[in-house]
Length: 288
Image (cartoon, rainbow, N blue to C red):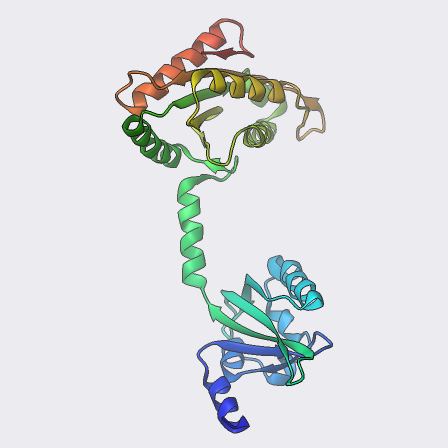
C-alpha cells in the first residue's frame, strides 16, 4: 500500500484519528476529527485540541496522556470534547505508541469514537441504582440485589446475614447542627461502613438514616463480629460538620442470619426488630 492510499484510508476513517510527535504535541488530525470539532488543523496543532476538552475532564485527560507518553504505554480514556455546535460529547480515546522501521519510538497515534449515548445510559443507570448522597445503593436496588442473593442462599443452603443499622439521635444532629451537618454525618457513616465490609457485600441506604447491609456467605457469629466492628469504628470517628465543630455519633445494629424465613422481606423485618431491641436496650450496641 502506498502513502497516498494509506492517507485516504485514514482521512476517510469513521473514527477520529490523531498523531503526536516526540515533543508530545499533536501534529495531525484526520478529517473526521476536524469535522467533529469544527476547527482547523492549525487550531488543533500542538495542544490546541485540549481547548475543546471539558474543564472538569481537562486535568485528568492531559495527565493520562502525558503519563503514558512518558513510559510509551497504550492508554484508553473517556472525556468530554466540544463538538462544532458547542455541545460536549463523551469521547472514548485510545492511544498507542508507534515506531519507525528501525524500531525507534517516534510518538503516539490515537483513535476516538463518540460514546455519549453509552456513557449517558450508564450514568442514568447508576442514578437509578445509587443513593447520590451516601454513594451506596438505594433502597430499591439493594433490595433487588439481595433478593437474588437470598434466593441463591436458599437454593445452596449457604448462610446469609442481614444487618439493619440506624444512626442514634440523628434528629438531634439535624435540629442542633442543621440538615447540611446531617448530610455530612450520613456520608461519613456510609464511608466507614464501606471500609469494614467486603466488596461482595451489599450496602444500601434503606431510609433517612437507616442502612441495610447484606453479608453473603456469613453466619451469625461472623455477622455479629462485623456489626461490632462497624459500631466501634463509627463510635470512634470524629466528624467535622458545617459549622466546623466536631461531633461523634453512634449506631444501633440488628443482626439476623437466614434460618426459616421464606422471603427476603421477612428476613429484613427480623433484622429490623433486632435493631429496635438494640435501641430499647440503650442504643450504641449490636443485637443478634
